[in-house]
Image (cartoon, rainbow, N blue to C red):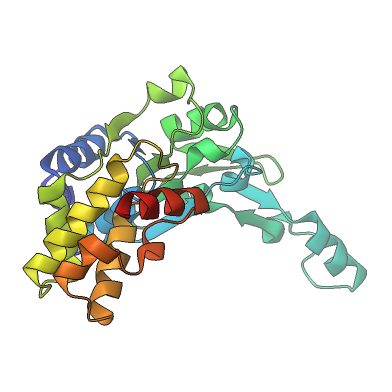
Length: 271
């Protein structure tokens, strides 16, 4: 486990609990399921793990139309038909028209990779169950070529969810689970300073105070995320805004607040 021990990176500040969850998942050879509200760094975690361990990152972005089969392989019958019509050599070799998906690519890699299955809850309810065998056994069968693709090196699997749908119990039993809580002020300050180590202290503190005040408002529909605070701080620095102006004027507040109703609520409160 020592060589696959995740300790965070200079660019990604991880709590000790999160680092422990990553390392337990690696040691137990189980997928790590990460939940948390948008903007808490779930996707960036996979990038940080890959960078920290010196491994290639493969990203499978899940959409509402994604099927489990898409991650295994696709048989390109259309291309084979075209090739047959134009007399392309080798059209009888079906294997030429088998395109591995992201999961298949991770299994077929000679080196261990980090596989990110991003936003699994966007797919239909059957999607996680359809992957149970493949994630357990680390193999799948290609019917067209009668070939079994078995993982050469078991990938480190990180799965993210925004909790839009409940995931099946059978799927959850096979995962290590970690919820990334929204950063408190101390951790948030550390995160911002990773991006802007030379930031003026009063500017940062005033921006953070305003930011957390907005998040605490009951009638805010979309709470601003960590990435939006980082962008706001950058805008304040570029604009030469003094720390004192932040609390009274909320300059560039559109960087933080993205809905009309939220903007009206924030500006009304500021008045």
